[in-house]
Image (cartoon, rainbow, N blue to C red):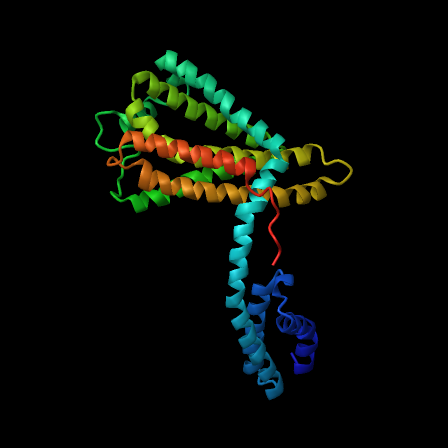
Length: 319
């Protein structure tokens, strides 16, 4: 490619980047990181093809200025993250509260029903999981066991942290992605997980394994269980947009609702990361008194509920 064509094809992008840097308005360039990478590549191309010294010098200066602004720009990312946690996420939950409530009902009602079945009839658990699965769950929370929760084959909390992240995120993804099947997948996975969790809790409670089971789940449950519900709400939003797109096409309706659903999924993912951390490093600890675990767990539940109800009521001042 001739230099003239090279400049003509990229001049507009260079000019926009230079103008944004001059006016310190990088926040108006949503694709600033990709533009920065592109101009770095274009500088390398210009040097390799031995374009004029003037062009190479211009691109070199633009790369240096972009590099400087790029790392300053990270502070804006932090500000955006703080805004998301403190304002965007809780407001998205309240704005779409009907989906959150529906998701909670689909998750909790089957769980409560199966809890009662398995509590009063221990054999009911076998309609949900295999004999091997039941024995495994019982061994995890047996009062005579030396550990709490899942066996640590790796013998390290850090490895279990990674395991819990993978497990939590996979459940969240199933519940959310199932919404693309006109909501049917989200409904199925919410009911399925509610049944599985409720059955397990009812069976272990009926066996009298409360001293190991509840101190383990109470800490991270506030974040994990609510995140599953929120993921289900995001999936239901997708499903309902496909079922009833209104006056627009299904694709347009999907694009519109996805912007809000993604906010909820991002927030749910953060909650699941917190849950995984607590499950690996706090819930499984045998050194913490049971009373302390219950107190901390109750505090977490109050914080999560309070956050969903009251956080982000006041819009932050734009910088």
